[in-house]
Image (cartoon, rainbow, N blue to C red; front, side):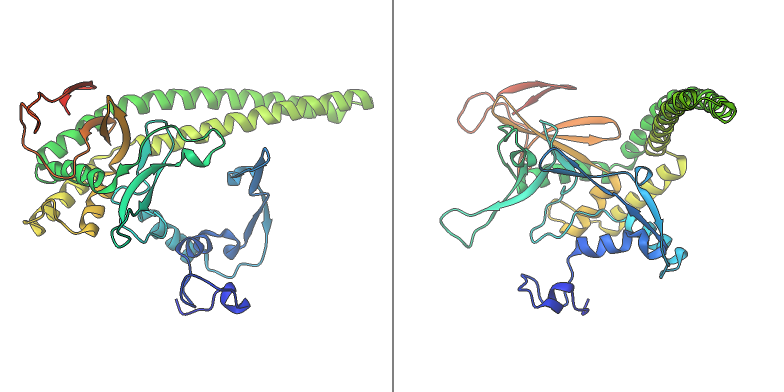
Length: 345
């Protein structure tokens, strides 16, 4: 950026050149609402001795302050940030960075290692659970080249077959309608409960204003607090359901745009194959919103690819191998039972 960082001004030694800001720092600045006149106090909450979590804005205390950025400019910045698939600063390339988790449920991150020849660096996906007090889950590291190649081949299948892509989205859209109907019913029920509790709260506050006894006022205050907390809890559940509605919804417009995008990519990159450049692969994987779970079953490393509410199990392989009935050792390959049928390992 060319602008001195706080560390530059204080003369701290840094691993990046002077004037170069960390990507996360810049992102935090762009998302800071203090620049448009609202700072939120008590954002961090300590749980136990070490764990610190960030509270939702609804649970924080808004503090007004002089704005220095136009709200329209800030809103534009948020829209652009939301359109990006942020994965932090990376020295090495990982196709599914920020999109992969371990079978134990924890997210996985990219790691590197070198053996003997220091010039050769091997890249892996590693479970984050080893950082927790419970210790590692026991899952091995997964070769980045094998995982990325497996996911990219799946993306190519969709890229080369727009009809399959369209069918997948239509099926997911049909399923989402049913799920949305359930969510709408839940929201209506919660709205009724909120209305009932707000009526109860209003009656309690009326009684409190008319009460003369200090003991009665104290008792009514406790009742009001209890009902108020219940209303806050119900509203939080309602808002969470609204967020799920936005996530679950698959519109005709979105389907049309995605299919058209994939067709355009296919026409523009007629020679796209397993050796496509990283940026091209990342754009397509992000557009398809592919997610990955890595697991080991009977000694075989599997890559479960999540696309549109379905899971597509694939054996992690660096290169595509033609179907065969025997392995290189002459033995029949091990067949593992997985969702959707058995697969040869």
